[in-house]
Length: 118
Image (cartoon, rainbow, N blue to C red; front, side):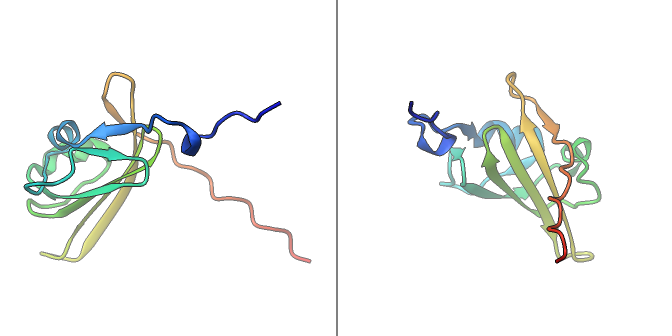
């Protein structure tokens, strides 16, 4: 019997449209930037509407902050927002893309167990 194909072996790569994400997250992309983010890819954008990030637990960021969106798994996005002014600050969250295209914060994962001490 053959093992099932992993996501990395499948012909179809899951991708997320950047323009749809930008609207939901209140960010602006760079001219000529990527249109879709596939597994393992990222896009760096600029925050235009800080209030749109607040429902995803990214609070206190200001307009102009750098926002990096990385596809870390099928329907999983890592959002990193950071700024240098007025105070250096960085916030990272993982979001899940639902079937209807909505975004929800991913549940926190427990750290892996530590190996036993011998």
